[in-house]
Image 1 (cartoon, helix red, strand yellow):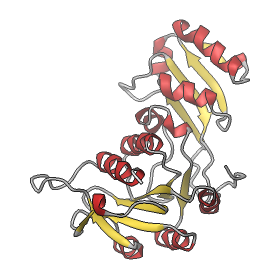
Image 2: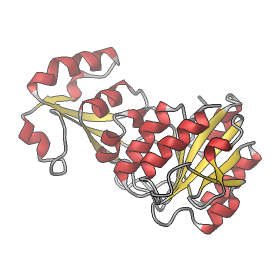
Image 3: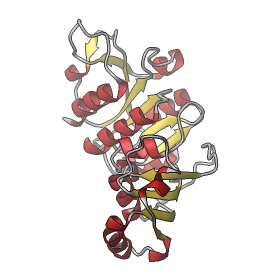
Image 4: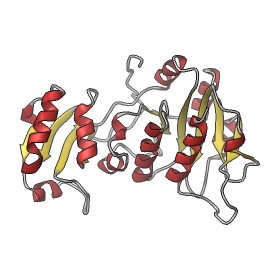
Length: 255
């Protein structure tokens, strides 16, 4: 993986997040790129979390034993925390240049680009699918996508720790830059003539998905080399964006 370059254009809010649930917290502990300021855990989780921190050279001093109500006070209502929460610093984004450098070492690879997909849980589920199908990176626009959050990490089942994420100012320009780096750019459009399963697979591929309802914006779609659709029944107008992304990534990964 290339030397990391911080993407200073990305919004940082307070640059902090609270992760919750067993998979997100344990994955964060195992990720050397993740700064963890404090871990709150119930007594029944304490031994496992201490052992995991020791395994990954993290100080036991970041662990605080609390009851479940203490954790619930800092989380959204009905958050399923399983007796674990971690106060962390958001992961730093990769730059588009980083992604292009990574792709040089992987002549057959694919990335996913999201055009104004805004629901954190959908993005979390998409991240999980990206890791499942060996997606090289996820690219989003910085102004119209949510910041990293506990809900996103929970929906990703901790896979947010494993996927390079890049936020860019202008998606159309980013797509052109990817083309110059040798990527074939494929836009997902429910009205396209060609279905994704008919495409010739292989090489460097970027899949672009728009928001539910509106789809890709005009300039983003015009920047694509081709648009395709999923081969679904005419009885179904569309699928949830996270479901559609999983199917598209599966098809692309079959190269």
